Image (cartoon, rainbow, N blue to C red; front, side, top):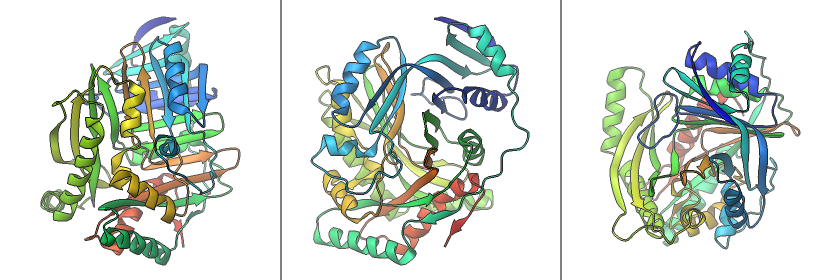
Length: 429
């Protein structure tokens, strides 16, 4: 393997388009895009990895087997995903809903080639970097995207959502839980799409710092995730849960007013505090004593469709705790469950009408050379089984005792808006 650097000849967006279309020839693709400079914890502005030299795929005993796989490949970047349903292995939980999409519980691969961008430089790691750079630059991007013809339906009607919401609030009023992230599925059957073109459109509609495209054979993930689940940098663990959402304003002044309302919203702050406490508790199980701290609270981040409230919690990983133990202690992301975490997951399994699968799980990578990792939360994401032509996405919102069913339902539709726009469609009632 050789590593060579090249000057970027096109704009970064144009290069990404060419690189993704070039990568379509391979059965394994992983693309992570920060849509701008990487944050203080990020290693890459963007990185594309293709063609598996080795594959890890598992549906049980995932973390034990994954540890063995990573130890056999100590040379660096290994991308992949973990399903939300990995929770059933970590805790005594069950998911009875059908696995319609048929994604595995976990999938990682050792890439034959990686192409990363930083500033105006492209770095390629491969047997022949020059040939790959030339092939990407010569790739012709379709001038007009293929027309998309999909009909997206909701798994729940509005009254059914209200009924599920009411059941969750009854649990809260009985003291079983404080908060639950209630999710609903939107789906399309007989969906014939070009996943690369749909992802590129989604990223144009909703550019986010943890955007990703993943292909594993016939399975595709097109993600506009704004949220980091967990990263490790030089022995430090970093989690950045998002809890609190508001629509964008139509003017700069209206935006400022909405953000100010968020900062002073008792509901948004209460939801965020609950998740911060949950994440602190999760991290404590992996931390050197006294190192868990909330380094940033209630920060407002603005994206094209929404404003979000984000907090940052960090700690130093205890030397006796393995990386797989860290995932056992923290997975899945608390922002997607509720509090207390196990009880919230049990209630979601009982009430939700569909299997979450990859939704609310994580996409990311392990760097086995540096002993680091970085994983997002799979939200604002399209999941696609190309063989079955089944397309699915979920959205959700926090249910508390003070929450309004209609407001949370509208928040679900707001979160769906960018995904529907990327599909050139509207929700079929």
